[in-house]
Image (tube, rainbow, N blue to C red; front, top):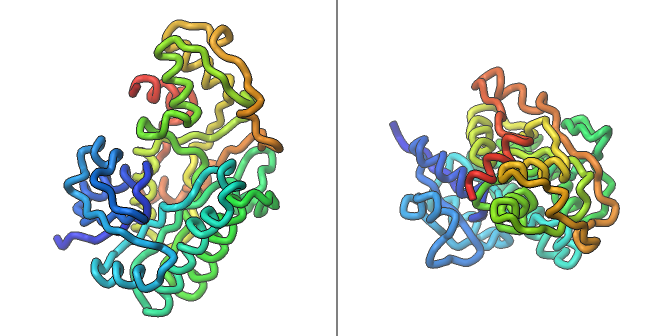
Length: 311
């Protein structure tokens, strides 16, 4: 059977797990980044660095986009690049807008202009929707939050829908929070688990917020199944929320510790106008359940325990 070609835009955590899965599915995988490195840590940790082709790509230049598409004739293009911090986006508005919106727009324009049949998948965030009772679906209203990251992703989401109406095979992959051992140490769950494992005190922000966390190695299976169905917008989320308090309690309990003795709240970690609850409905990926029996099983306390054991 002829191998398929897949290009992953961005060399981050989700891309590395997706690359590993695609390799097992007999795909040739090309990963692009703004600058070529001697080594890619995440790919090295997953033992796939030698099985992936790395290419330098400026997503803001259409000639470079066209060149790499013509070189590899990809069946799938996964746009997983972009500045993803809400806080950093306030200081880096242009970088955030360019990486999340303009780059994706230029890809879509290139596919349309040259009538390229590659499937295009753009990663996006549940933050683009308003949080009504915390539950998010594709019918939720678009957020009015003026945060630069959220606004850049809203524009990208709308661009994908526009080009899909023009006949381009493009989809939006919408995620809540995604965790894995490959995340940086300052990501909340990994940070808490690491402090709990070594019996250290931790400073945290707002612990009353409730978020929907999913496990990266599991989420990429959903992404893969999306390549097998018609283009659409799809929210991949566990449907289960967990608060900061529960994360702390669960992590420290693994070491038989009372979390109340090991944390303090620091105002510098509290975001203004923080959204209290953000959970995606499980119904958002019903089609994957029916067609492929795909279910997100690792979330909530189970995810915290899994993270703790990985450290």
